[in-house]
Length: 218
Ligand code: TYD
Image 1 (cartoon, rainbow, N blue to C red):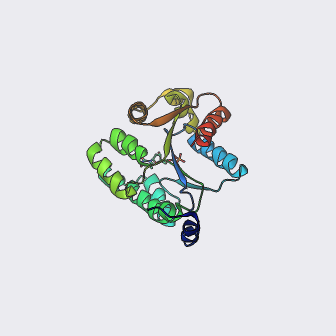
Image 2 (spheres, protein in one colour):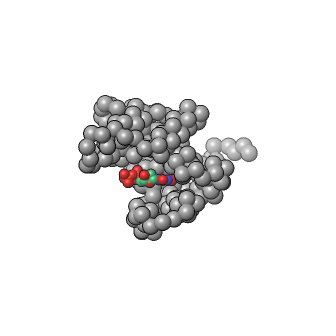
Image 3 (tube, helix red, strand yellow):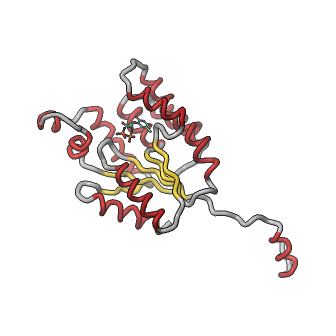
């Protein structure tokens, strides 16, 4: 459709000023990778630069998600598939009540964990079928994909030490087979998908700078 300038101006006036959709960023990593610390720092830096930022933590964040997170952290016996569906239910609550309604209200939406966590933990870790997980991820997210996923890549032994609050050195050095499977799955995902690996073995400030440089180029 072609309009001359004057007609185009009056035509454009009838439209609301279009807002930009938030950049949706996911952060992944094993327990003790320093992921949450980096997200906090990144969120603060973005806010200081004048951007509005919404942070979600999976599982959790919503009233229902927080209840389910507490349940997941207990040792109540459950089938592996039950845990998978609870993780997905937490994700649904975040998608429906935090992400979709806010897609045009923020500059950045930062997710502390997203669909790749389920592939790594419930898939490689707990042995649920990866095809089923992919299907559930699609249903739970309504196919909302991150603009960028960061994998905070920390050496497994180091992450294990960081995440253990107490214990002796022998215990520190024993990395469970479960953790190894999760870690290897993340490495596999990071090598095969468009995930940005952020090394975080030494300096959390350097890792934060690296993340910021990617975000600034979006
Ligand atoms: P996180 O909040 O990163 O750890 P922390 O409790 O130390 O703050 O993640 C919570 C746990 O939930 C973590 O062990 C990974 C697990 N998890 C899954 O197993 N599957 C999932 O889909 C998600 C999102 C998390």
